Image (cartoon, rainbow, N blue to C red; front, side, top):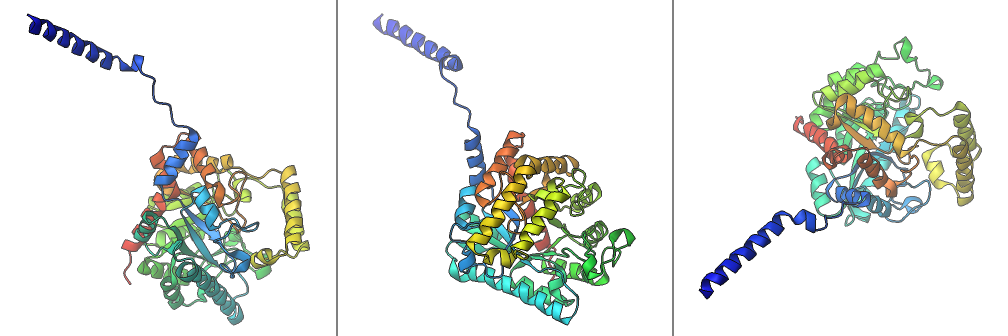
Length: 425
C-alpha cells in the first residue's frame, strides 16, 4: 500500500513539474534582448570587414606615416584604429595623378606607382609581417582573418601608370595588385574620365570625350587584367567608359569607391544604368564615404577649402603628410569652421546611398568604401576607428547580420573569386 501511495505521489509530482515546464515563459524571466552595441560587436567578430579604397603617400611605413602607431590627421587608417573599429582589411592604393602624356609623364607615373608598391610590400613583408599580411587571393583574405592578422590588399588607381605597356600590368600583378582602376581625373590612354581636365586639354564628355568611352588599348588592358585574374575598377570612368568596360570584361567588375547619381548628380557617381549593368555582370558597387559625392557641397565652401589648402601649401597627398604641426592645425581649424557653416555628410547620408543601391540592384551587389586619406571621411566615420558606426546605422535600418556581412566584404570576395576563376595566364 505504501509503495502504491508513493508511486501516486511521484507521478503527481512529475505531472506538476511537467506543467510548470510547459508554462515556464509565464514564470521565468525572458532573456534580455541584445543591445545595439552587442549586435554590432557580434557582426564584426564574424564578418570580414574590407575597405576597398585607402590612399597612401609614397613614404607609407616611414616616420611621417608609421601605420603601427596611432596617427594624427591626415592619417585616418592605422593598425590600432583598424582593430578598434573592426576594419579587418584595406586595399592600399598605388595612385598616380594624371599629367601630360609624354615620356617624362609616363616615367614619373610608373615611378610613383612603384614607390607605393614598394612601401606596401615593406610594411607587409618586412616591418610588420607578424601583424598584417598581404592577401593575393580571396582565400588569403580568409586565412589571414582566421589567423587574427590585419589584411592588406593592393589596388591600382589610374591606368596612366601603365605607360601604354600591357607588360607593366603583369609586373604590377606580380607585386600584388588585385584591381585596376582604369582612369582618374583626366582622360588617359585607356579611357575617358568622369572628370575631364581642361588644363590637360581634355575633350568634354558631352562632346564624345577623347575615346567615346574606352580606347582599343583600354580594351586590351581589360582583357589582360581578366587573363591575370585582376579585378577591373570603373570608379572615375566616364559613363560611356564604365559601360564599355563592363561589357568588355569577361568577369564581374567593381566600382571601388563611388556613390549614387540619383541621390546626388555628381560626375563621379554612378547612374542607375551603370549600377544595373554592374549588377547584371555579377559585380559590386562600393558606396564611398566622400562628402561631396554623397551630397551637394556649396561652391562657396569648396572654393574656400581649396584656397585654404593652397595658401598653406597643401596641394598634394605627400605635402599634406609632410606638413608641420602648425600648418596642419591651421588647416584643421579652417576646415572645422567651414564644416560648422556647411555640415559634412554623415553616416546616415552614406546609408541613404547604400539603401538606394540595395533596393535598385540587390544587396549582393553593394559594398562600402571610405576613400580615407584621399578626401574621404564623413561625420561619424572620419577614421578607421569609427568603422563600427556604419554597421550600427545599418542595424538600425533593419539590415540582417547576413546582409551586413555581404556589404562589408562578402560581396567583394565573391567578385575577387570570380576574377581568379577567369584567370588564363
